[in-house]
Image 1: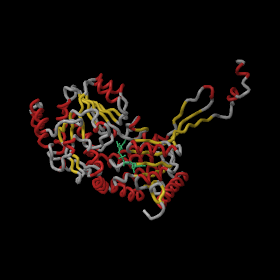
Image 2: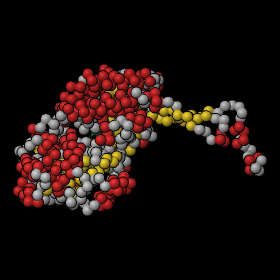
Image 3: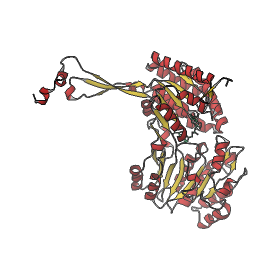
Image 4: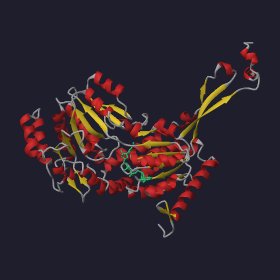
Length: 514
Ligand code: NAD
């Protein structure tokens, strides 16, 4: 930043640079350069080449920002963007084809069709938790639709943001694709310009700021927000499978995934055993001390570490760095489950001696509960018997803590979910057909997974987005192409015969029934 005058939290120089970027993108778009399919395909090919040639650089940057395991970045970020770009690239012709419609008899002879045209100059505002995926996947969709694009990566993933700012202009058309780095000030300055679409991923509070700013220009928005995604488990489910899948969904990226299972509602017959099985799965995935596992990530910054600490039961939250209760608890559970069941006796022992602090509203710590601020480490933590009023149930956790609550049955679980804002995802582990159908028909969420957390975001054939408080609009594959396109209606009527004469005034011939 320079010493120049400040406007809206940024200095004039940055504001001017952002204005110049917007003008450059607008000029390029207006020139028609981004419309030909060949240009769009070339951009998507270049995007994939960039990911291929800088795989290690991206993995390193994300590791530096988030402590994310390299393999996880490749699987859950780079490969997904490459697949999305490829999927869209191969379908541009199909998606842009005219779609004929039958015109009403009264207008015949006539023809009509719809055709997708690019929205124009679009803005993509990305968050930090999947800093490559959530910047480049919307970018791929916007390019497939033929737009000029400005991306604003998150300042909370600075290494990844800097890498994107360095590489994107080298691989993509620099007059049509721009990267603006920065935080709230820069985003505010961008939003002052009349973009043709704003695509925002992040929290609800900023979502409202973005939507208000966009309203000034009547700019349409897509809001990819978060929320508390519930999981329901009943006695018909295979507990070991459910526990592994829930643990995978919750603890990938140290829980910082928008569609991660946020809390579990389980029926009384299985709730406690499930909590313990999840602890077993955690140990299978990350070993005795997850801090030493190369496969377990870190929390983005100390502010979030402290926020998460505040959600833990009071006694656990005061735990400092060392290994904590995870190990003895998990090993006892593992031994017990090897023999087919966790007995009541073992369960009582876990609750009293090995299982951490005494219960409070947040529940009992089944495993984890360890926080190391300096290392930005929060152990994968399972809580059991959490009260619906506990702080951990009042906000999206967005970290490696999983409360397990007991509910009487599926009906009670549905009422619980419906009494709260509509989540980005809901997951059900039940073999009972009626229970599954009840969740499908009676709850509303961005997506619903039976036995499958996170899975829906891996397919370019499935629209991805929220509903209500979890967002509006969708992307991925065709849904992404549609988001960044305007569907234009085209009609044509030959000059002869001029059948429209029948509806021209004066109308007395019509009203007299002539
Ligand atoms: P974040 O802090 O990185 O913010 C997101 C973007 O908003 C960033 O680019 C940031 O610079 C910008 N921003 C921040 N403050 C701003 C302001 N005052 N004005 C304008 N722009 C501003 O991300 P976050 O909000 O911490 O993200 C976490 C949330 O995002 C969680 O709720 C999570 O569930 C949600 N999320 C949703 C999805 C999805 O696909 N639906 C994906 C990832 C994260």
